[in-house]
Image (cartoon, rainbow, N blue to C red):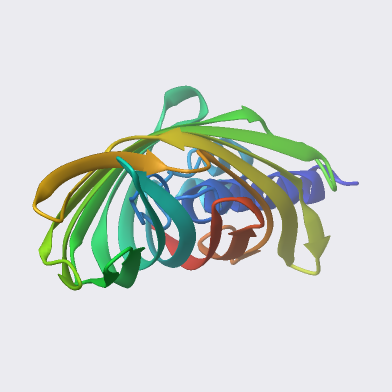
Length: 256
């Protein structure tokens, strides 16, 4: 492969790596009562050293949507729950392949099933901050990459229906994503596997008492697929978890 072709491949790998952590780890994203879809940051600074055209892109903005299904234990209450969330994120590259990301969005809808009926989530507010690191960069066609991310997220909403009360949740998480980059013409496609461990408290009010708890699983694992276009400036990603906490997500990002 020519040096120019090799550089283009590495640029595509970096772009996909950036997109995966930003929109697919996620994650992010979907934890102990926090539906922070697309939360973890990407490694956008990797493109800067691999491709001259992509190097002009210093920051990245993204929009993502996520659906989560899990079980919360709130004191003695077992509460199956589903949540839908949307988020806008801003990523800034740091030296040595680190990336800092800030995100904000809304818990759009969802519910908590309880012993006395269903409590429905009203639109709420969520926010997150995360720090990611490209541990292993993909250096050629079908070469693997490894990305890690640490994130803190929080959400506030209010439930109505069977229970009318404020709902607060906070989440700390660690994510790992690994995959390969495949070149198709001038674009790139990357299948990947993302794993996540997490934990954090949930605060609610149930039957006249304040209750606290957390997620039943504290982990998620599942596949995804990411696409990169126009020298990493535009990204598209789809992913989901099939083990532990169940979730599905999609997102788009733009570098500038």
